[in-house]
Image (cartoon, rainbow, N blue to C red; front, top):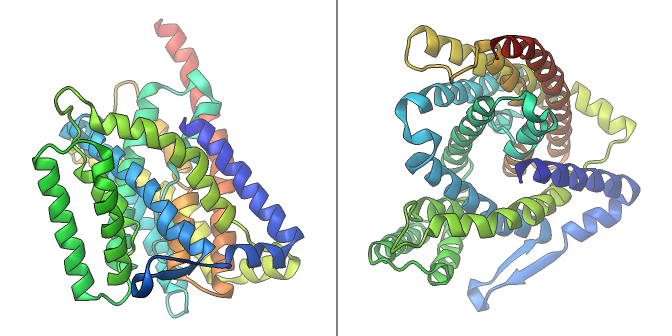
Length: 381
């Protein structure tokens, strides 16, 4: 599903680029059309692109929250020994790109985008692995998935701490009360998903009015979903099975359609190439992710605080580290939170260019690595 989702996401991004470059005014007019939702004084008026980013993407982050909860309780991250290496690798893959971006942009006006090169797009990265089929071991795929989940956790924490607006204590208190209500409902074994729809909407509304990124409501509800069956009913699995296709094939492509559109005229490209924001994103994602993931993995192995999955060497992790530079969805999401005006176009061009470079390089490196591994495997067999 992730592989197919990566293809749909790529098509949506291509449509956005064609649309904005053939009908720039129409693209801007459509996505900046304002829509009001809610009664009276509680009504919220936002452009369509912001409804996509703030409301539809809440479902995406809810699914991410479900995946994180599953991995922590019953998946790869439940085993501390297995989880340590991808967790350390993900941490290195977040810190190094951010530091590179800051080093390139220090003294400029682009520092707000320091978190853009921290994220890895799991759909695109797994999609590249799927292209190579059985030549990529299951252990390597699991390592990438675990790394991407920890990467998602880091992105969520960064968004919550550093990309919230001026906070309103009353609305924030309301969000806390709603969260406690959800916890109580869960403890009382209220398991039907429909019972959580209204509290979920109220939580989203409170966070929006409090100045906190409202998509975090989805993460909170996902993490509060019971990971183990209740009265024989696998609540989390059912929700994930139902919502994952919706998120993968509808919501994220719509997000790409609304956010990947950037005018690629000669002047725009020339401006981006000279922009420290673009350079920081490209170098951070393509080089920083690789150095951070490989460096942190090597350090963890040397200090014996993590171990390699069975059948893998550090060169295999290096191949995955290249794919870590594909930072499409969450990178564009953070771009929208960090920038406005001309700088946002420079950042988008940087994300698109870096993701394309990382995908191509990752495919080449994986082919080389899998080609080297195959004769050995056949010899052993």
